[in-house]
Image 1: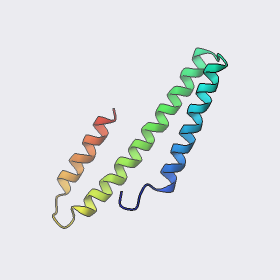
Image 2: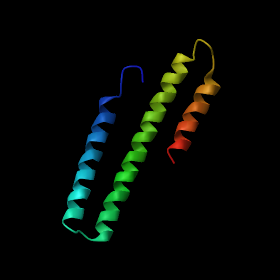
Image 3: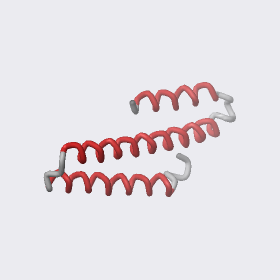
Image 4: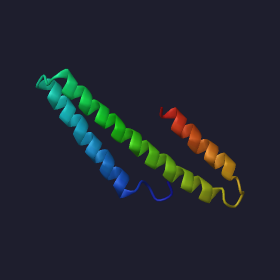
Length: 87
């Protein structure tokens, strides 16, 4: 990313961090397995959304950088590889 990560992405990561702390607290307090798994699933979904944002921003930056060489296909292929790696 050209100018670093956007504030909205950092904000999402901070919320995820809070979710993880909450899950650890639930575990220490011996919350039900169902409740812990529900929160873990929600956290995983939030992380997946952040990955999507980072990859889409990366694609935009790659296309901008490759604009001079007109290598858009390679930029898209790299973004798809990033998405596949995240799964």
